[in-house]
Image (cartoon, rainbow, N blue to C red; front, top):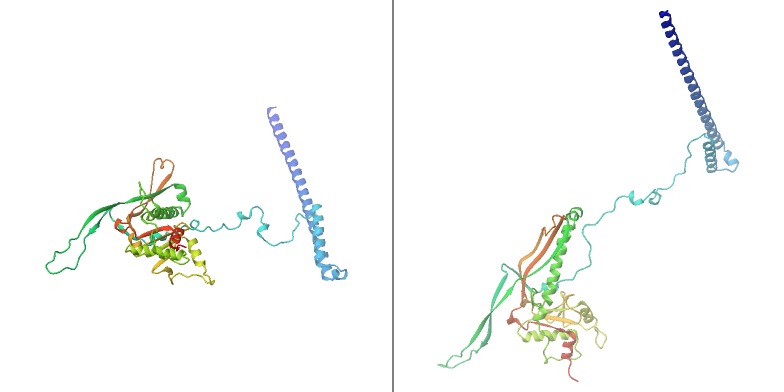
Length: 393
């Protein structure tokens, strides 16, 4: 009995497996039939498309388009319409588009994202800076000391005389006095982040350049107009004297005449003026002046190096205000650079914590006119000198 029961169970399991296999086989057959139907449908669609293309080719080759007054362009457009119909019906799955010119405006999105990156010129651009003409004419040297002394011979008395045999020789004496110049310091600083120095290649060089130019410009300005008190040097315009001569007169005096009169005053003090500094506006008015006959009034002497009044060069300079004139023997204005310009970079305060760096640009120098050279420079208004030159009515 037990053996029969086991045998029945085995037969039953076999029947179940046969049934499952039959079901799987039926599903595979159905899937194959569906795939075959899809293949047949695709073949029929391909045949339909080929028939459509063959018909178009025959019409073109037989000249049918000419007989009907049609063009190839029209046939192609009709072909496109047929393609669209096929696509809508599920036949042809792609619609082609006519090609067009490729332009920047045709880019999808932002054109700047697709075209090459622009080229950036190195360096920074800035407005023109003033020319430092006055300093270029000074007696300029370097020195190794922050203190300069010089000794003047002053208050001479007594003169040599022609004398007879046995006569007492005339007595002469003089005094000496010491003058001193202490170097003055001019400086400027910048604070800049380490990221800026790393990311902008030319920034360090531009900071150095700008710092040096700023020191040069402010030095030139103070060497002309400095008060001489505190830490400021005494400017050349403060060493200069106004025009005071009363013995020089001229018919219809102008700016050229004013410069010539200032030269005469300096020469009367035993100095020789070599430069007359005027603002470019005054220089233009001098050049444009015409005489009674309509011809331009020229200075007494002009060379290829520029205009001169006598042996004195006329120098245009933005450093001189409009309406003013500075005339002088520039060999008597002494500039002595001590140590020269220094550019340093380092840490200041909490710079390290903030990734900052401090850049220093500084210079120490002497600038002076010796007291024995008083009278070597004239600084005054053109109007004042012209008024002094005008003869009394």
